[in-house]
Image (cartoon, rainbow, N blue to C red):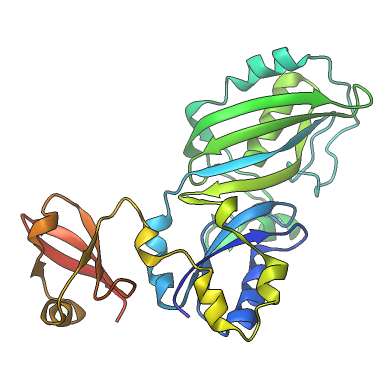
Length: 297
């Protein structure tokens, strides 16, 4: 099965767990996810199936949208509710408006240090594996962009148990957990992420996502699953689509350059041989000359 499947990941599962379930449901072995979600997190998890896994490189810079809650009072070693408390609870003494003033610090371009307990690779090994093995982990800051971070409400039974609801838009590579942790440091009482739901990953939203239980109910019905996949021409919307004849397609399958005059200004184009059959991604070399850089076969 070739295409992109948008799932609504439930809590309590790793992204790898989800991939295994999708393999059983679709019968497709070649599957890759576009942006890991922590076990605690829910929401949009796009998965590339079959030959479409070759397109992963073009989705790397996708912006993400989130909603969730931050618990004030203590930090944890993982920066979220699954970690171990790093200190005794301290009361939150700031109001919602005062927290919103602090939150303005998290806007625009900035350097962010990823959590030690994360999938970030250190010498080819996931940082969380090194941390759990008791080995020293040095996390280097990464340049990210936070487009929006809004605290919506602040509620709790006591100053030791206050939670703030939030919404965030952040570039690829940004960690919401790190923002929660740093905001807690600025507030003087510590904080950690206690719930997270991804509402958007690039062009994909919850409105397009299939619940995992719904997918399980379609086991043995590959045609029905395929009907739930986004249309191939809607993927990578920044690239225009062009349909070529069989002679041009043959040249591209052999890695040869071709002329596509109608898209002389586009740096990358999606090349189709029919309304739904994606053949290649081609890069403009000069003028109308295009070079296939990924060929689906």
